[in-house]
Length: 261
Image: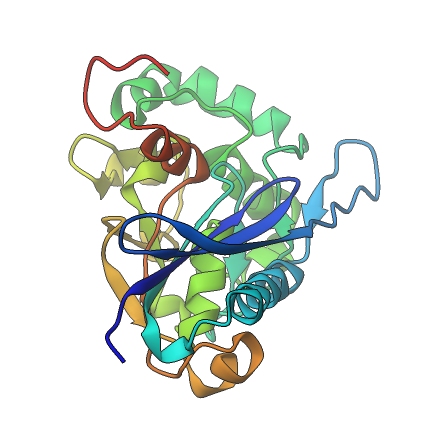
């Protein structure tokens, strides 16, 4: 059977949605699973990364079932996701922290620290100011949970985490798409590289930062284990994907300068 289908998955704040599409962009089926926000104390908003992963597996499986499409006809799957939160992974690519949501405000003191020390530099290089996003959150884990921080080998957003798990990637293969960099606090966005000076000022080991890729980069293939859980054939390509806001702009046709969204 000729390859003619694509699957897209969005790990959103309210839940995970998957859709299966033909090459003309027609949606053949879609599925949704509500997220589980964990609010254990004031200012704390977390999710279990493995629960997020299982929502990806479940919604893909439901799309295949509802559409009755042969998994052999699916060329690739890509995942977009919430942009400003992070997950710390160990050597094996599995999480050692919960998903630290963009709604979680515990890193507020480190926003103030970054703003005071390098606020203008972060704005100029990253394209966005320190906020409830990667930079201050990484510093929060570094200073407030040092025993956990020592176990972290890579920081990634949830879309990257789920895609890595689909492919069985380790921390050394961790990645992030360019569309997330304005939330990073440690990147030179124009050059699409991590900025050594910003990292040095906060004593952040650059080895903890994932490789930067384009959204269309192939990052791996569905493993046999994940194939059994989601219904896609082993070896199905997994594409890097992008941040959810970037995906929203693309979906509404904002593909060039001068378009107001």
